[in-house]
Structure formats: structure tokens, C-alpha cells
Length: 76
View 1: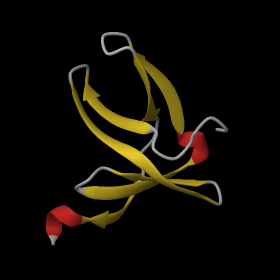
View 2 (view 1 turned 180 degrees about the vertical axis):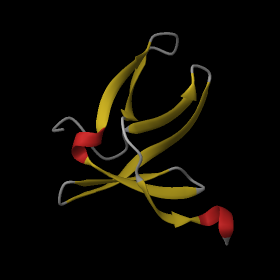
View 3 (view 1 turned 120 degrees about the horizontal axis):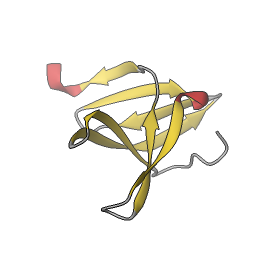
């Protein structure tokens, strides 16, 4: 998706009130790298949709499929 840029917020929702949030740190060859602070995950560009968070007045990217964990700091 052409609208994805560095620093965009990405949220992985588990239910309406529970999510993990990270930010886009790298866009390379059709892959998007997202730093969730405890781990880094990557997806193809086509794996995202925009989600409007009305209560916060923001838009975030939400992956529509599972990504690949590249680095997991929780296990080191």
C-alpha cells in the first residue's frame, strides 16, 4: 500500500480493547518491518488495512494476516 510510511503506528488487535502497538521502522522490497519494542515483525505491504480509532481521533495500520517475527527481545 502506497500510504505506508516510516513512523506509522501499527496495532495488532486481540479484541476491541486489547492490542500491541508498534511503529514502521523499515520499508524494503515490498516488506514492512514493525518494531513492537519487545519484538520486530515483518509483513508484505498488502497485509495492512487502515483502522480509524474514533475515540482517539487517529488512524492506525492493522495487519490482516500473521507476520513473521524477525527478532524477539522477550527471549534474550
